[in-house]
Image 1: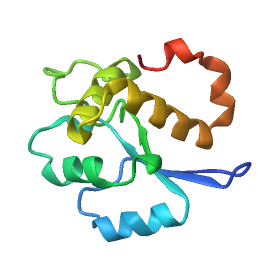
Image 2: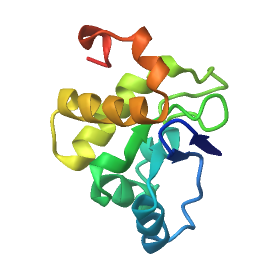
Image 3: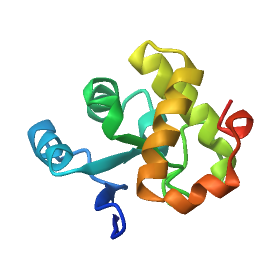
Image 4: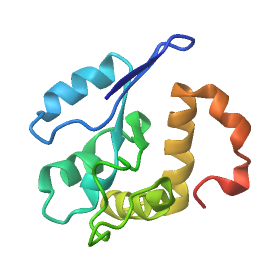
Length: 130
């Protein structure tokens, strides 16, 4: 999935393949892209995605649910994937990066607002994934 915000010229790529190499992602980051990480990252065997989630610059990362297509690891038996799982996805990424979940939430929310600045109307500091 590709999204471009014309107002700020910030671009977003989500639902990308684990087959992509880190140098390609680094080039996209240099071009101003933000990269979405979501449900696929929650699987312990998703080693490449988890490594990228922990090593790419945090300023280039946004969180997503991949809903409804790629559910997080803990959803079983056809349970519905939804944005309600974003907090737990953020906790997993924070653990992978060895930082506090609140720090990750603040940074990735700021990154998301660079892509979708009108989304700021929906948030106050106290309801940002904390």
